[in-house]
Image (cartoon, rainbow, N blue to C red; front, top):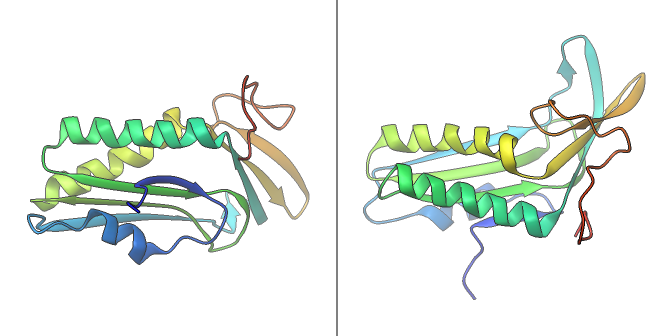
Length: 159
């Protein structure tokens, strides 16, 4: 069974498994971005984060990010996995692996991927601070979700 290169998962992410998805005999570089849960955001102490997603749409949009990268940087291979659920400090939330014949496109494509994820992928988070909690909204924090989730028609937002 072929591996999925663009996934939303509930379990801890295996970094090496994501890297193996982009290994290629013609690759001279593989870059990885590992997004983790940090304890401090400004002066607020995070206890844990909760990520949720509209999984079918989120995986489709991750795949779109991969297609955009393939069009912009020829010869690249991309795999992206984002975790949802409750994550503790230092847990891995997202892993992006990009292989390329040369290092510069691999670096550029990897940065492009995380920025596009924040722009277009329907994943949102709840910050649990030591003095309260709040749904943050979209990942760029431009659109608030006062009810805790965006309005999405036609799907279970956690599956």
